[in-house]
Amino acid sequence: MSILSKQNMVLFIGLLSLIACKPSVSEENIETKAENDTIENISVVKEPEIKEILPEDIVFEKALLYDQYTLEDKYPYKDTVRVFQWGKMRKELAKIENAQQKPTAWGVVRNRKNVNGESPLVKKYSRNAYKNISDSLGTERYQSVPLYLLTDTITPEIYATDGTLFRFIGYNNDSSLVHVAHVYGDGEWFIPKKYVKPIEMQTFKRIAVVDRTNQNIATLEKDSTSTKWLIRSQNPATTGAHNPPYQKETPLGIFVVQEKKPKMQFLVDGTSRIAGYTPWASRFTNGGYIHGVPVNLPRTAIIEWSATLGSIPRSHMCVRNASSHAKFVYDWAPVDKSLVIVIE
Image (tube, rainbow, N blue to C red; front, side, top):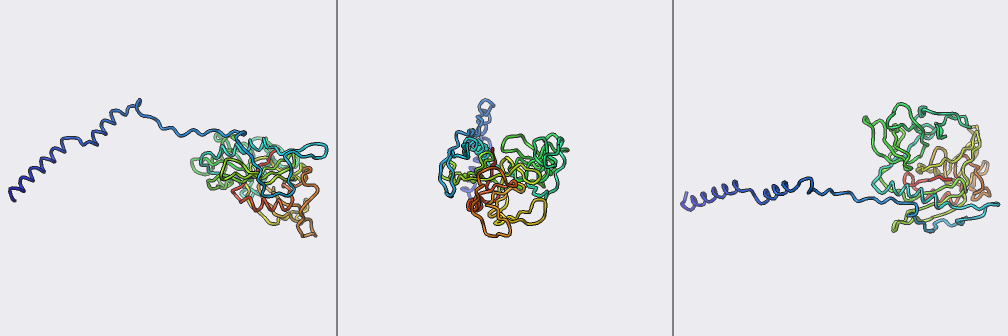
């Protein structure tokens, strides 16, 4: 080894010793930071506060896509005046908007014709005018699902109607029960997993609002370029009648559009014989559809209009419309991505 090489080796060893003995700049910074990071000095990063959306924050703008048989906001009916209850609609939309401010997973309960099994008996039940078992709130057991308190998973407390929308929260310990919350804020519940269909995380932008009191329907769409809700149609409708043993009221609530049929056959009351069909049927709960004017056999051609539309409840749970408006709803409201809200 040359003399120059030996000198280089000595310098290299000395440099290593110096580095080993002296903390690096980054280490010094870490030590200093550790000394300064006391509880008093650490700043807590807060999530941005989410402002509650109030009913008065909901703004409507008329932008009709369907303009036949359009009703005014107030219109005469016999010796009274009927209205579109925009105030109540604002309250319902505010609930939906508030639930959607954070990324939310949704679930719809499904038990059409008890396809997922008859619900167990609730704690308090009775027989209604139709001789069917119902809970303390009047919700029938048939085609409904059981809701369990978080503190009691043995006996359900109440029922939820097929098609009802819930916010998905999670599962219980063994994942046999789904933990949900109602959009209305009526507490949190457990539901057996077999009754709940998950809906992908999304916002609902197309909503039909049916008014049982005023016998009308409005279709509303969230504007993609603003915070407004656009009124796409406002039309007469006929809801379900309370008339045992066959005719039933259209249930109140927030429901998901679950399936569609271009022709929905119906039966002669109390039989298995087909009586006719309704065109352009969009099902949202149990046997409840938004559909066109019923066509009774032997006729087969679609009927566009009926003088009874917008008069008094007279259907079998369904919401009857002019057939062209039913077709508009059928095309406009996609399955699992649209809602039907029934108010009174």
